[in-house]
Length: 314
Image 1 (cartoon, rainbow, N blue to C red):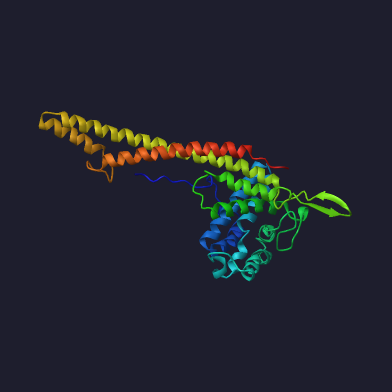
Image 2 (cartoon, rainbow, N blue to C red):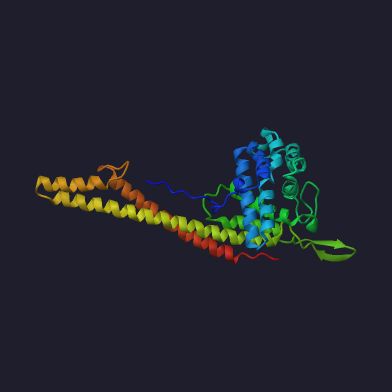
């Protein structure tokens, strides 16, 4: 049976080969990162650019966010591997070391004239609009808009990776968590004897809203992929049903040459790994696979409806 293949993100990749030679050379440092961190960086770069596109940002800013997002975790190549790849929670001391990847990445960029313009990605991507981020606890407009976009992409990809998504089914739960990070806190604070709402959460709701549009398109992309696989399954079912018809005719044939004729027809329709003994079992497996894929398509359409109903206050 042909394996169904699906990339969680719609196909857009950081195209290093299309960039300036000097910049491409500087970006080759990303190869020093471990596989999972590098993949995360590629995802964040791609997703940051897609958010920019949905927000109709100009091409120059979009490319900037793509590259700054791609190198946002560059500083992790300086973090000890026993901390970076540790299973389970980090200790307070280890967490403080992990947090230094922002400053280390920034310092590395500042030493490379080609990476210097994109140092906002490494330095600011963990800053939060409400001042609770790191490394400097900046607030609101003190955080570059590029970094606000990269943070949305970073949080989304981190949640997707942590929850081991292989499909967008139930992705709305992740989107709800992101909304909670963008929503204003409910608490009231006193300031000069006046009560004010702290109006900003951790992440900017505008790029988050653009992310939701990207996610809906990715779900549609997945639906298209599953539908293509459903077409493939149906074609295989028709082929195997033809074998069944030949087998029935062979059983009803009276003459040996007729039986041989129908058996030859059956053999010609068999594919690699199939035999006259196992093709009916394979037929049932395809039927089961068809039921599963049709249910996934239904579930994905439900995810689109849920996602479109999610409200983000801007």
